Image: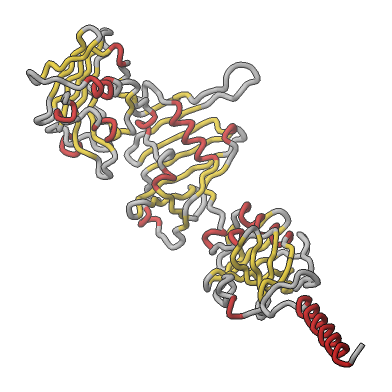
Length: 450
């Protein structure tokens, strides 16, 4: 072997060695594939009892005591058991994988900057770990030890499990019980209206018992059992949307509640919920009678609960099948019309010379089957409802004697969702969904055969 060949061989061998070493040594800022170790000791479920969670600039301190969870700072309050349990379990299960980056410039990319979610894990007063919890990608969550630059990919933990402020960690339970244990409901309004309902104890034989009216200050016949079932169901697992810690009872209306609902259980215990005033357009003040905490509940959250005694009445305003209808008459400004059934066909008898489109008549004739309202007006006065001068009248005749329906249509409600409707000569005014009335208040031009 000549000298040049020997030198070339040594150079080539050196290049191979350098390449191998380079491949085995990861580029700065990338993850080694093995041998990373753990940045903190493995935690066990009973090895820690405290989490300090800082979201933004606010810190919430959660403590586990046996199977219970509580908030100790910034307020002493029960923690949401499901949320707290999930957080503690995820911390105990988290498994560190590889280092994704050690570049401080990339921390914001991983949501691990100095303003990122911070979780301090403690056993009593001893700090076991101080972590920043970042974004979750492909079921791996980015984690950084406070004061360190290394970003770790961690499994068995997701950011949302810890990313909560104090309000979100608090237990928002208003009332809670097993629905099957409810045996009595009492509902009373500020104005003095009251209804008392009772459900017999279940037996092994026969159908499940249903709610029955014991007494009522207003007419609730025919009785709508589904309303009572809905109230009991919501009371059994009722949670607030937020808290009104600094609210005064006189400002919330809870010193003289609009509605008081008491559920009696088969074990002799009772729970009483109070519904106060509205706060803005969407929130209501609510509390439990024997506890000081005031809650805020959204309108949608309260709808099944906020039922005056009259709301327990069945709200069917008409139940005429299309095949029994013989005439539909609608008086509505310039769009007044009458449709009459002649044999198997429908014809327009008003206005004179008008021909209706057969394909559009079925929408009208089907409107009277199982037609229900949403509730009852609190103020039945003609001035409040617009029924002093109705915007429309609707009448449907049936081939079955005594089965006809007549309505007067008043104003829209303030939320534009319903009309005030008087059914026949009834004194109580029904709130009827706007869409279900509008399908009858059609323009002649839309009904006309073209």
